[in-house]
Length: 359
Image (cartoon, rainbow, N blue to C red):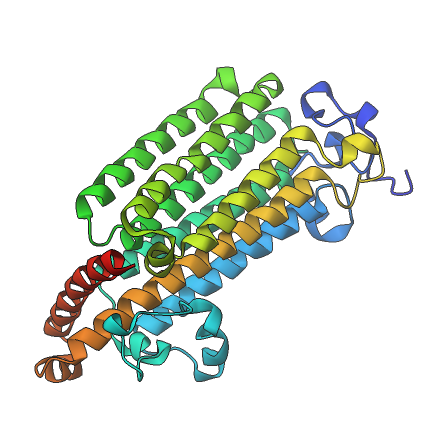
């Protein structure tokens, strides 16, 4: 090895060996036996975990920044120089039926309408779940060479973070997709929570933590991720793809699912390194590709939520503002304004049902 601080796969202890197609670029445990030394390896030199660490480390930082910006928006402190990015057309549905909007409706008008607590909680849950998942992932990859005990502990936490990310992404999407059917929000929300708890148990149970059960763990996470197919298929059956794309951003959710599944399959099958042993030791290995796909999937989910948020606020704003009382209530910024917005959203539900029947 050109870097004396690194070693080959053959020089690793048995508990640290995982992917025999990656043959070099490993950090030996005897040179990284403290947390400080592991942390130093994040910045000091390049190894085969560098990309895995930095992709999710900076993804977590970006998620924290988004959470902070959402807080600024809630308190009407959002910086104006970021508005061209924050209000980009990618965050707006391509077409809203004339019965649910007006020619003057825009994202800026939707943005000026009040947030209800479910909007706030939904985006907070998603962004905090993203921070949790990405932070635990980067921590595991940083400390995996420390010791068997610490690597084992953070490997479990890494998988728990994935569970948190899946459940935390699912819940706010249900809020928008089944806004007009709260019973199904409860049913599917409870279901994903129970599945998430079951997946967390499998992750934390010692019996399932060994490398031999890696395909089982991967299959469980695929099943957990694909559980979103059921409510989405139900939503399509109720509304059709066109409406569900407005209310839930379903096309972006489909893209998210495709990214997760593709990344997980590449990771499980060790593609591409299984076809060129040693060529992808530092760049382009399946685990690194999986990390990038996770970031892209999370971004796709964020776009879906933003588009759904825009639809419900723009449509409800239009209907509510048409009433003579709303303008006064909206200026007060009190609970009355949010009640008027809720009335507008219920009216949107009726409009959606009528529009669906007309298609």
